Amino acid sequence: EKMKLALKIVAILAIMLIVTMTSAQQFRDEKDRARLTTCVGPCLKKYPGVAKFLTRMSTKVDRLQVLFIGDEPTLTFYDEKEEVESVHKVGQMSAGEIKDLLVKNGCRYKDQRKSDL
Image 1 (tube, rainbow, N blue to C red):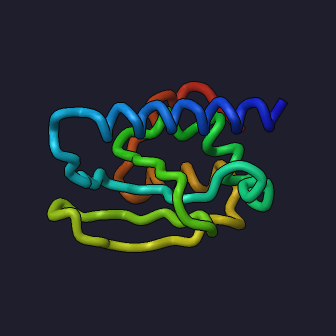
Image 2 (cartoon, rainbow, N blue to C red):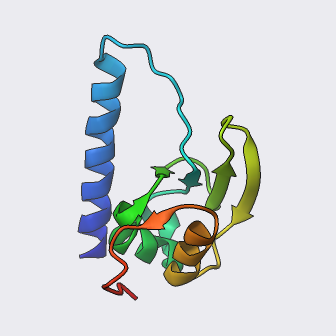
């Protein structure tokens, strides 16, 4: 079941990439407040907290971009000028710890009444 979910995520990302690449507008890498870069597929099994965060919480965090590139999961925060403010290795963190780090650094969790943990 987890593998099916991972495949669905990869398929959605592939479609988004194709749409972006074929659009008439030139791509501009606009950074939001935070960017989570991580691996996908079997590699993600090494990082259960990150996998749980991605499947249950990542869409509920404002000002967060998720990119499935690289190996070890890394959370980067940017200032108003899109300059790197801080970088955190989050591979060994739980989903809740990742969410708390995001909130502490200026991102808003959209549904604070429910807990996904």
